[in-house]
Length: 321
Image (cartoon, rainbow, N blue to C red):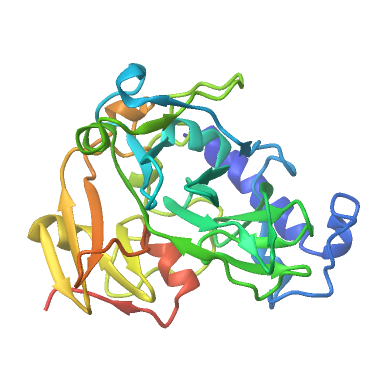
């Protein structure tokens, strides 16, 4: 852990020293840095790997749920259920190492994304301005959150908010689709005829967690912004719906909360992907569903409190009364 912290400190210092678009133009010659919503380039730093050093996946293969035996019941998956399509599960054991999957479900081109440093798992519609974009991992971070890029315009996108922040797509918002993280056992029980993404053909330690002990740290890595208010621990998971955040400890204690037009439910059984060396052995952090008054799934995120505060500094904290 000490070696990892020293490495991250070196990356932070190097990132701050090179926070200038002129330093990046050799790597991003097609990106228009004159168009940006970034107020201070120091906010952006290198996460370590270069552009595509974390390889996004394209057009993944799938296998039937009853044919999959490598994934432990407690392991987290991102569930995508689109009308007219077979339900699909995207295991975090793979997304930890790839962070973005460009796929299609029910005729909808989607980007399934996971940022380990923010625990942010979001699915976006890839259709933007009459074109279909495909996304890669830039290797850059802002507020410890992954910056994606699209291969078509080489614009940069902030994953946590699904918005273009540098280049021609600055200010453009992606449409977030309802998806959620749950245990593999919960997905199987509900979708016995579902599909699960096949193991990628890359030499990676799938099933292992390279961020061991991260979500029990006192401070987030590669983040120098303000800590959350109200005494909320920075690495507490919160359920974000729009600009509201419900602390996970409140939801886990209640089991179900209905307020602000949505119902949130918590169920035990999902392992943290950011705890122990083996994801399957991580402590139980539970699974969350968010639905509206008609029972429809609502786009949301389960992210760390520091990231919510960083991107929604005026956001509403849904604390116990």
